[in-house]
Length: 106
Image 1 (spheres, one colour):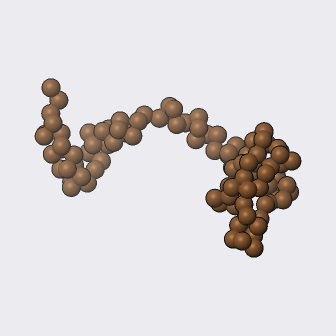
Image 2 (image 1 turned 180 degrees about the vertical axis):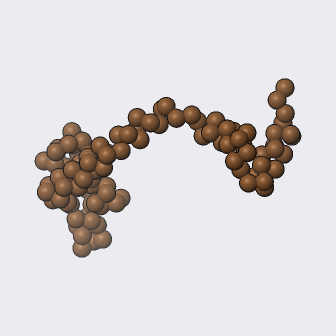
């Protein structure tokens, strides 16, 4: 089992109350009341392994996003560039220009 077991539990049983040591299913203590009292049932080891594997695949598939993020210009820089390139609608350009006029560069 990998380190996604806690996340897998929360995906399968949103809001579940549990305690786990070292992401080890054998050390999973289910703190929910019995289902007859309105609690959620403890997921099986197999159920958690399948969900954890799905989460691992999902995480791996987004590696490119994690690599790109620190290299992109900030949103502020991107929007400023769009403004200066004239890419906004006339209404948005007027709103932005009004703020720039109100607080000019020193």
